[in-house]
Image (cartoon, rainbow, N blue to C red):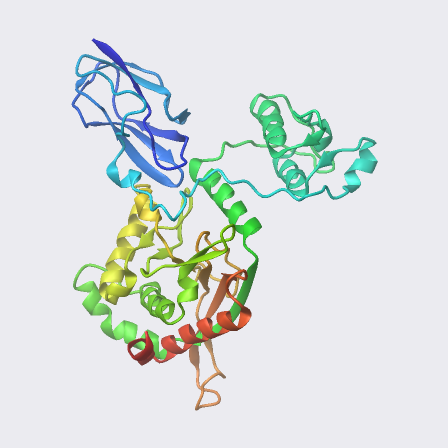
Length: 419
């Protein structure tokens, strides 16, 4: 008896994924629960198990293809009957446990369109008026689409984001050759976005367009902290991990959030409510070949620095190897992004919604003239950039929070006294 196996639910608000690897071939015998397909959805990679034992009679998906939830993936000969599409998903449990209060990374949220279009100088030169919001025009420019060529789907004549996307898909992916700015002639190479890049695009657009950002900067003297880190590094090495500045910062930030709970909350603007969290899950931005990922260290306040260092090494390794799950990236209450390993100083990190703040860390430098007691004593200083949601956090709050972090870095006893 043959039955059709369709792609099960992958997680909250996830409707499709990219096929990373097909783990079986036609004619292979498979056991119930055996992984037969590797999917990348959102920013997570997951293996999809077979719902029953049998023999692979046909494979209906291809490596690199995008497949939708409910789409036919395999025909399996023999074994048990296939579960109905409405049955409980068969993906790995860790990929099916989203935290309710934190939307999945690829929630289909689009930039909020402006109430009225802003005149575009291009209209006059084109000789044809176009009705489109600024964010629609921006998307058209990014996709290389001449907005004058886009035909609106509605009778009102206003071009929407979906109109631009549809036009780009038909003309770029279909080889139609959409019109481009001829002032910069040259070859154009088109590359399909990965699921990770698409998830980042959607989520970062949502964060930037819905959160009024403020970024404050400060410098922390880490001379003493670096000496302590080196002194106690062997304790972390003894358990097979590495004590890093990021691991120490996780502990410092968790303590700071207890002193300033407003930075560990989220807001519901529709209900005018503030949701204060009594748990402290710190997200760590990780640079991978596939793009930016933010795995989460849960209950950071309850762990010592060696424990945090172990967790940090583990999730970073999983992220870079493409083995991170959705559960690993959900439930964060505050994010740290450290660019010190690459370089640079101050920057303006984007708040990772629904969180309300994020701490950016730059590369520490030796400064010869910043000693508190010795005018020209060389000190190791680290640039910090705190971005926050101005709807809930005022400038004075931001300054106090960042100063507390700086003082805790410079005087670690403050964590025990106040954190």
